[in-house]
Image 1 (tube, helix red, strand yellow):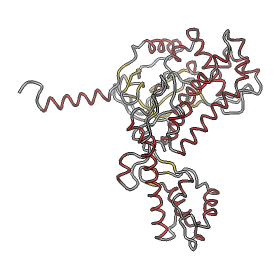
Image 2: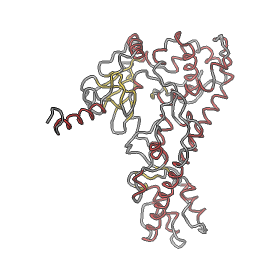
Image 3: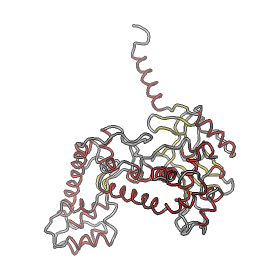
Image 4: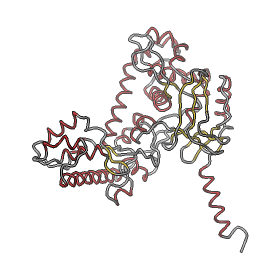
Length: 438
């Protein structure tokens, strides 16, 4: 037998292939990261634990140089590196922000600063950071309408609301943008376009860390809690890890302390919170695989779709549920229908003679075996409704490729099934696996 053709050699090659798939490619020698690290070093930041890298599953992230232990501070970013509303006030925009009435929101101030600095190009002291930011984002407000229309109905409604909020903020801020004309030789309308503003909004919405600031009269009453953290914001999300992230008042640094241990050359991940995929897509523009918090949300019209139309007590039942906040956050999870969903269905499925016992249902008590079975049957019908709805959407032609610069969570037809409804396995079992986003 020729060398390298045997079983042991095949197993060795497979192991090497698996290792190469899970390990990142060091990107610290790329020009944009060289410039970023110089810029950070000038602001007193030094990193001995992490290095920029590209990973097959998550894209750009941070890779461990050495072993990292549980409880260790893995990244400490000086306050001078953070981009906050203080940064805006100290800049050339500060006087314009302070004089404008009514006071602009902290979010508007950050977005305005980002657009202005992006326009400044090589003249911007923030250029090394701006150069590594995505060119576009994939949270629903940034998606093309034909893509957003494929989302499940509860998420589609939130996506439209998000897009409307961004558009209204932009429209209501045009006069403020016009007041900045003395700062620019070009017309502000060409600088502060909706496209530029949407990019800035996406940057703050998807990449900012929480950092509370005190109320200041130059800003509106909206919470001032967002800070952009260069380099730190390269850390990707995993629901399986634990971290402690906060601003250290003593060191004046924003610190990430890991609750997990990491081997050398592994991607270091943090957890953005125990969010389901709907919230992750809305706030961050991505859908992670194997999310234990993934669930499918059930809207009220679907909730009552398979209940008897002749039920004279239906309006009263829905009123009871609404008064007790049982019409929201009704979901299917990995284990099937949630307790809230089943409780709502049990109340809605009460027979006329059982209706006086509705309080027992909300307390988790069993009213009758018939009620238990009926509510489970309705839950299964709702589940199959989602499967059929998803399959119908999957039959539609896929939208055109997203604009250049989009790193969309949906790349191939098979992924639409995970995004829009249930996984393939769910159609072959009772309740099955939940949708990744629904």
